[in-house]
Image (tube, rainbow, N blue to C red; front, side):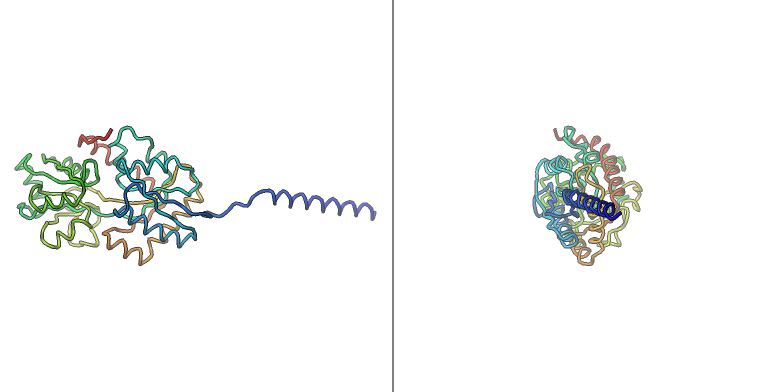
Length: 328
């Protein structure tokens, strides 16, 4: 009997040792993130996309305990950076800070090597920046309705400026043309600054511009603001009506920015990043930084952001086609 018990104890010890050995041979799954993370921006440093990306990178670094580093890969209307991330390993260590430009590019560039919806996993929307419809104050209009009436009475005589063909500012003007049914000329510039200079000088008559760049001119009396392009009024200009309130209920345009990852990134990684983004957007210092940019914090789930991106691609496709803009 004693011999039998001894054998049983020996077998149990051997089995326990074998289990321990197997457990030791399987590496433990490290919690994400366990090394630095890159956030690629498809534009040069200093622009709104880059600035907001750096604000969020700082917050993610503090929240998740690893460095989130912004890496600029400009070119081809942000497509170089987007394609780079689309082809990256889907492990959460190479992310893309996306903007409205990417939704427009899906139609503007017919030969893209990536699909904004299929090749990425949405993480979270970060912010929206309203556009504002501004006119030269010499133009005898003080509302959107008066602008439409004036344009219809003077077909082909009004021109609207943009920061470049195919930009969100250009597409906002084209959407206005379609919805208002007016004949106006598009004049593209190499950026908002020269476009605003000519708008103030009277060489062009109106423009849909990002609020941060045009609002100081409105406050100085050099431009007249008629409406903001988002469905809600801007906290920066609460007395200014929206385009929806001005007779265009389907006009909802903003520059927006958010975080996406390569398709098939693990759901737990997406969940971790989303939670950190949402937490950051509630912080007073982040809201204050955004407010200085004219940006509004916008919290979403990954699913909601995915639906938003698809809706943006769908909205801009017919507008791009109607404008005739195309980049091969």
